Length: 181
Image 1 (spheres, helix red, strand yellow):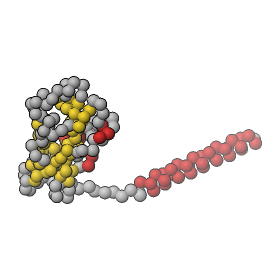
Image 2 (cartoon, rainbow, N blue to C red):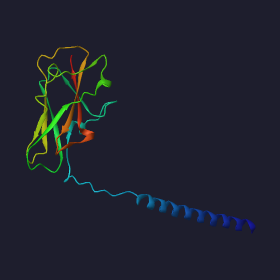
Image 3 (cartoon, one colour):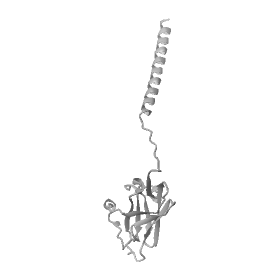
Image 4 (cartoon, rainbow, N blue to C red):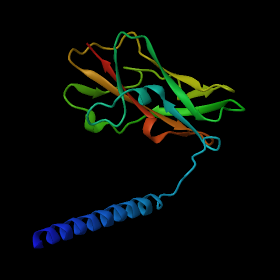
């Protein structure tokens, strides 16, 4: 008789402990989710620009942006720029430039691309038309790029935006590796 009473006591004690655990877990879960602020992000009030290739490509090791490889015989390469947010009521000119902070990627086989020798950007602006969501940055490669077997020239394009439209920080850069073979 004594064994049965002990087993009933243990069973009751385990059930009581289990219920307390379940209740405690539910309370913690409820309180934990109640602390997050629910923000409603509205793209009607903000406009951003981003490189389509930066969105689509997975960055190589060490890079925080996608890198595209072109050959020195490629005449030109267009990079689509997306407008994120409300479409424009008036045309806008967006500035872009070459990001010069690439020293850590340069080595014996990768050199810094030089404007006029390896590429030409045809100015540093692109134009978004009214009610359009895309525009293009055209990178032109001169026909007489010097051949340099086993080397590549690296260039990073960066969207700078303007007073009304800011660049998307995560997708504002795209790397271009020019194969000099």
